[in-house]
Amino acid sequence: MHKTMQRKVNNTMSVSAIRVKGLRKELGMTQSELAKRLMVSRSCVANWESGTRTPDCNSIMRMSKLFKVPVDYIYGISDRRYKVKMVRDLDIDLTKLNGDGIAMLCDYYRYLAGNDKYKAK
Image (cartoon, rainbow, N blue to C red; front, top):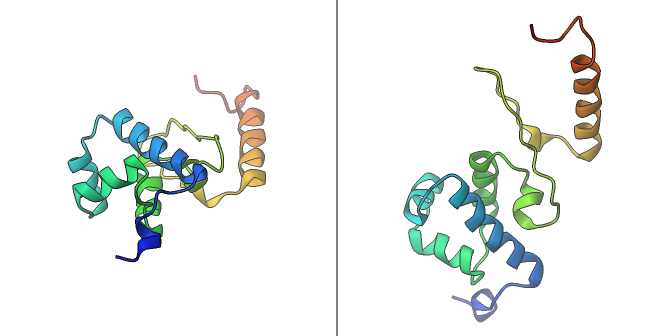
């Protein structure tokens, strides 16, 4: 392995180490369980969580879908987590929207939720 790949990651990526561990624990998963879901080794997950190594793009994308958070949240670029209670059989991937798209979606939701015609009974 190349020496630069073995070095500790910078402060921004340290946030991702904390976030990966926190998100994993929120789901009540062990490192081994997460590794299996992401198709990597347990030691790989342990290295991500310690900040020794950083996840590759494919692993980040899988985590984003598994944890239902934007990629930016995992990287520590954003603190925004989009928690959405979904209706059964409704699958919406909010990670495909940028900040303006999320804002527009929230505005539309407020409009619908505030209108008696669309409120759940």
